[in-house]
Length: 432
Image (cartoon, rainbow, N blue to C red):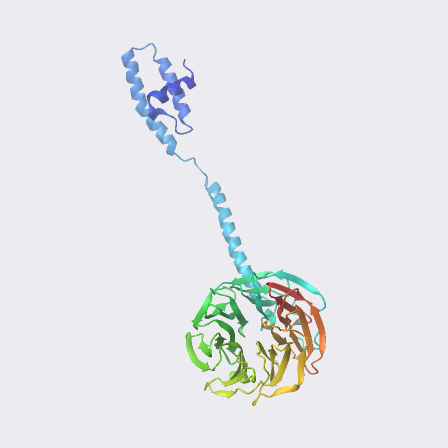
């Protein structure tokens, strides 16, 4: 009897159709060897006929063996599908978990909800350090809703703005990439569910906090440096930037409502007063002899200028902030001090109070108040953070927070002592 190897070699050379293509092929060759040995006593013609007849039938067996699938029980089929279902469930649960973090009360914030504001505590040590962005961080802001105040918003020159767990893990909860250019300003709407942002791509956008989807986008045609929602109607907001105009938009219909024109090159910041009936715009209009039009008061409805003789010193004001309780506001000046103004006409400056000790040196250094208005906090171009007593204007504390310019510092509205700071390298620090 010829060996199986010898038969396969001879067959592969004479008839290519008989080459094995599946695991059943060796069985076919073994059967062919048995047939050839049993037919040795017959005549040559009948043996050849039997070999030819079996060739076609064996080809059919070989083809069937190549296409037949092994039987898999129902239990095995279900078990093979289950991992995919589990993975899909895990992905869905991770998304829902992210939404819960953005909508549930933080355990760190819960004990302080409903408490009356006592004396403000100042931070002493660093709690968390985050390399948050790949470009300078322009602004930080805690969520205005008390039970969601663990959420910290940051806007950066890396074209994104993000929401962080600022009092807990310090993790990034959501990244928003709705702009094509640097995000110069961003803020929460009072509901805590939407974000308003302005970018150097010329647009202002309204974005859903949880889904990250853009709700509305308004094109201005100039680089947007500042945005401000109207307190009485947050769907209406102001946009200012590299233009002589400040524009009011309605996000619901995405239409421009009003235009406020001033003979300036750039608007640095805007601030609503009197529940949105009036607002202040800060500009770069500074000459050698006068600071005429540095701060301009506007009537929101009529677009009329109420006053352009508010600030007479030869410094521009990159940031404005309103006192949470008193009828006053402050302006950060490039003279490295913060000036205090009345929020009522004729918006007089308080010459007896001046908050000094920090440096600005051309940076858009922000300033802001504690929840009860007793403490004023601001950054510095030297990287430090300064805390001032609002009534006496004396320095309460100074933190050496960053190696580079600290452009924003903000006190937590609910949890005592917690403060967030950021710098020009994209770093955010949480202090307590």
